[in-house]
Length: 189
Image (tube, rainbow, N blue to C red; front, side):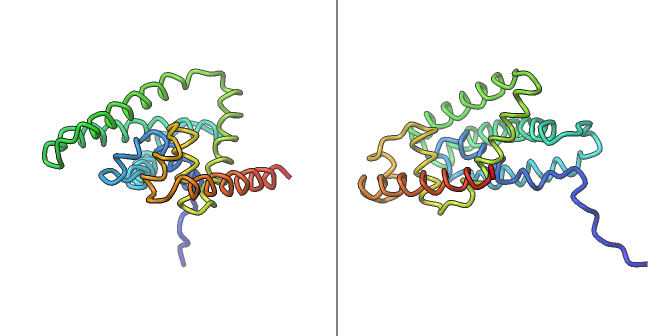
């Protein structure tokens, strides 16, 4: 009797891009050299599979909310651990500010999750579509869009971060937005 692998019973894997986007949005870009958002997402999904029998939801929106809460706790734990280890990594004042900024965004994120179930489901669906569309973009375009539209960085700041001129960053943003809009429009058909 051959045994096939168990299916993705709770369906958590389909949220990987969505969780990665959230992790990237809630981590200050200056911390990414020290703390990889993909590692935090992997830990979150691993814990979700290990605790799958505790999940009582039935919808994707409920699964997303459960995973978001777990991701927020894992990000907070990672930031706390990094904050304790920062003496070993360096005493850069900018990293202290980055930790504070990421922690503040996490607190706001958790507090903002109080909308109605139907609004949460609609927001979740849009967020998953956006995360999927962003995941399809080239890395530099995705990074430029996130830095400008979420972190409110200037073209100069993004350019320094990516090692590109402000004009090149403007091109990345223009192409990235065009591809993002196209991908989102195709997803609605």
